[in-house]
Amino acid sequence: MLSLLFCVILISVMKMKTVLITGASRGIGKACAIAFAKEGYGVALNYNVSERAAMEVKEEISALGAKCEIYKCNVSDSKAVCAMVNAIENEFGSIDVLVNNAGIAQQKLFDTLTDEDFDRMLGINTKGVFNCSREVSRIMLRNHKGSIVNISSMWGSVGASMEVHYSASKAAVNGMTKALSKELGPSGIRVNCIAPGLIDTEMNAIHSEETLKALTEEISLMRMGRPEEVAELAVFLAGDRASYITGQVIGVDGGI
Ligand code: NAP
Image (cartoon, rainbow, N blue to C red):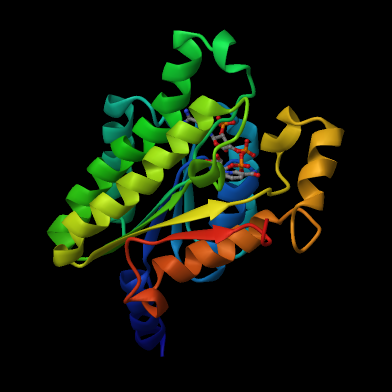
């Protein structure tokens, strides 16, 4: 009886898939971490500065009975990303799914943007996606399977006033998604992108109440989205039910 139980546990551990979610200490990344854990994934949870929040997400996931480890790393730093991915591979054995979620936002008039503003925005939102995808794709190429889900933004397609660098950083993620899906598709790796609309997270603290009200009035469903509503699609796109979907940029925006 005990050996049967051991075998069942061993098989389930061997079958456990691992997801790396960047920027998962709060907001959409946190919702993704919890949603993947509920689907039975082991979760490698990345954050940059919010250690306490990341610890709390880890505790929440552990309480669900799923394996979770946290990894401090600035995704814009390619050497740090390489070290993080190596550490995750050592701990979890492999990485099956990558969710490139980490991101920052900033509102500023175009003619006041500094070089530092532009480089920081593109460094995290765009190069971060490049850094993590490059490292993780090396593992996926060895395995001849894997799924990458990028989180861009509706502003990457339509452009936002006073967020030119943010819009550019997200348009680049849309382009990277399409190009990478073509290059990795023959190796059995799918690459898709979610373009959220207005989602109720701390990121929107940059907007005034007036702006949020005006934006909400333009949404067909007349409300902001919930992080969990983005996470639902991330889990779907990552899994086998989406086995013939690649190279897509899909909006979760309430019809704005
Ligand atoms: P959020 O609540 O501000 O969370 C951002 C997350 O990214 C945090 O966990 C943060 O962790 C992490 N992060 C920031 N810089 C990082 C770095 N250099 N390295 C690693 N992690 C970093 O934002 P959110 O609303 O959940 O946004 C998540 C993603 O969705 C972003 O890519 C954002 O552009 C996109 N998005 C959001 C909305 C929206 O309305 N909320 C709409 C469209 C797209 P630390 O605090 O530890 O740095």
